[in-house]
Image (cartoon, rainbow, N blue to C red; front, side):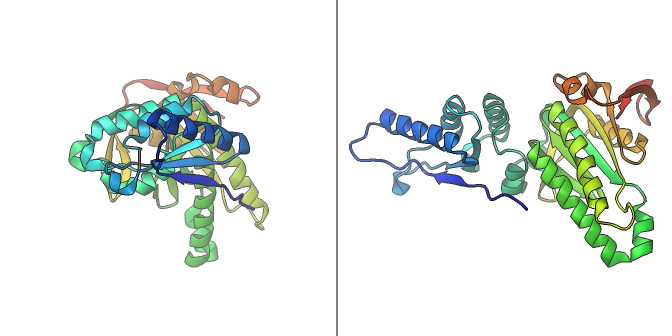
Length: 298
């Protein structure tokens, strides 16, 4: 059963007779109380007119302060007035805020779903210095469609998508797109991506317990590096060699296997995630990549 999560949507309204610094301090104290009470998120809208009685012209500034006063509460910028922001500056500030908050900014799946084509035009691609990409695929899906029919197979594949997206969001990632029965997801932290991959494998195994036979056999690949972020088909997407390598590493995987490059395996925190698991190192020739690439199978 899915849990219900509660959050707060705020404008930081003006209070007559209350100095602005005291108003902000009072809100920060309220956020500390929300954090202690177990609320999931705090959403703040951006406004630049006294007509709405809002004193929050910059969510990023206020949420940066809130990040230092709370531990678990997630932050959701409700509205960015995009004509007042340069796209590059906005993305950089959002990234800073996410790091200052320890990854608690809802700029993952929520940010993508809310902003869509307003983020980055295809002609204004932005270089992302460090992103971890995860690709999945279902082994034997063609035979599944043949065996149980298109409609039944489609419904099963959609159920598998729902499971993978839930795991991705849980580990602070975002599903970039689905291709057939494959998923591409992005993470800021490589360790989060590895945790997600392991939990995806467990989630798919749970789905198989309800089936007469193992209809779901997942293959996963991960790679970390730089990419170009653009918006296509109203979705934020990534392009470049990092994407190509991640997809080809996934092609190395057999059923129920997770493969990753050394860029992911050597990242901080990943060794702790994998310490209780059997990991096999090898080298692989990847199309379009010069020389053998160190890879790890889990």
